[in-house]
Amino acid sequence: MKAAAFNYQKANSVQEVIQLLGRYGDNAKLMAGGQSLLPSLNMRLSNPEILIDLQSVAELKGITKVDQVIRIGAMTTHTEIENSPIIQQHFPILSEVVPHIAHRAIRNLGTWGGSCVYGDPAAEWPACAVALNGVMVIQGAQGERRVLAKDFFLDLYTTALASNEILVATEFNLSSNVTKHYFEELSRRHGDYAVTGIVCQIKLNQEVISHARIVYFSVSSTPVMALGVQESLQGKNIQSLSNTEFLANTIQTAKSEIATLADLTNSAQMKTHLVGVLLERALKHIAHQ
Ligand SMILES: Cc1cc2nc3c(=O)[nH]c(=O)nc-3n(C[C@H](O)[C@H](O)[C@H](O)COP(=O)(O)OP(=O)(O)OC[C@H]3O[C@@H](n4cnc5c(N)ncnc54)[C@H](O)[C@@H]3O)c2cc1C
Figure (cartoon, helix red, strand yellow):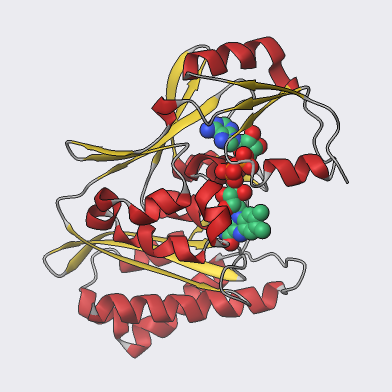
């Protein structure tokens, strides 16, 4: 099938994008790499009057470090994140995630912002944004507003972004604490969307966990934080994470608090089982890192 006819405009600045969104409202669609948008137009799931191409908006591109803040521009591609020396030094987990996203051609065009705004619950970046406590930087006619990533993903393919706004970047604060990360996803073939995945960030004060973020993806309609697990990790000595009894209790907590939803090929029961499998691997790995 082919997309219905649409107009096309290349924007050169965020200001121009906002003006165009003001003029066309819900009839406009922003286009990043087109990796999800174009298939959805071809399938006639969406029928915008105009596509606003973000490829020439330089201020949306690239990764910077200013003081203790790492900023990923919305138009930064998956491949650029993988290869960024800043990311490799400060959040190597993000570079490690990239090979799990689709295939090279898609990674060369697909963007951080496109993935976050699309809000696919099986995508890696939304879960990473929540686990690393990212701040979504949004620009609209009224100026800039900032939304914590944990409050940005509202439902299936639905975010806190209004139709007259653009996601400009995501910012991450660097911590002075020793920080440990873990990422794993289970998928049928490498590069496929995950059946279930986990992203963890653990901050330590000496050997004691001062802050834990445990986030699952591809289990529900958004990334899901395991709040009970996070609470049970708080204040624990890192070595105790691999204690058999503690592990069993924590896995039980995760399985009972994550309300998994079936997808087209995997049952909710299977995802609940994988929630436990991934948590056990994550905690054992972090304890011995
Ligand atoms: C075959 C295939 C396999 C894939 N496998 C995976 C996978 O395993 N894991 C994974 O995470 N992803 C996967 N993807 C998704 C892909 O990695 C892209 O991240 C995703 O499609 C978004 O693409 P894009 O950046 O080109 O955004 P687009 O497709 O251009 O846009 C996506 C949506 O976001 C909106 N948008 C884009 N940028 C902005 C912005 N800055 N502000 C506001 N709105 C914006 C657009 O209007 C559109 O609604 C796959 C895609 C394909 C086609």
